[in-house]
Image (tube, rainbow, N blue to C red; front, side):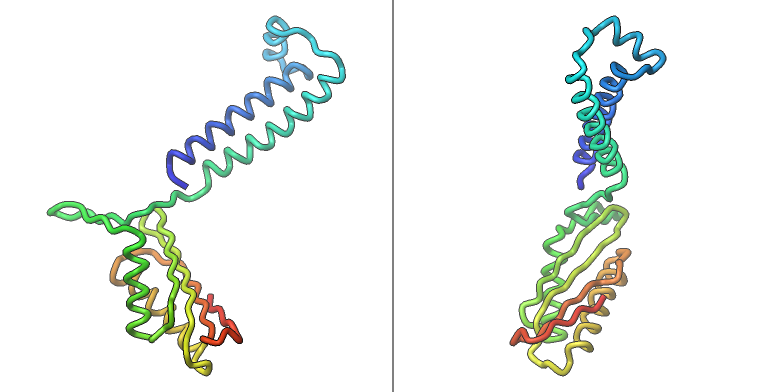
Length: 181
């Protein structure tokens, strides 16, 4: 989630919580709010006040959830940026995925690997690899080797903090699937 999206979700959540407090302040006594609202509004019939309680409660819950999502969801970035003495180097996420795909094909002879990299702020990264291999007997060892290659490439060569890579390897005939977490 980008910083702007996080800001907007948090802002909408705050507005929903304030609307819920406003509606509940019309129905239940909140010391300073009820007096102020009594001067500004007309009293509602009982049916409408019951519906307003339900809508206010739902708006409040949705608002609180949106605030939590806006505050605690990690920021996702699409490029990796390195600062140096001579300038700034920006590497797109897709270039990292393609490079790791090439390394897996050239070193392990994987068939059509699908690499998904999720870049986060502060140089953190998650990686998921889904591929096929022609030799059924070596599924587990190939999956472990692919995880080691991904870990080495991202952490040692690029200096990223890598969570444990998720590697799914299946035989070319799709009989059995093996997942290494």
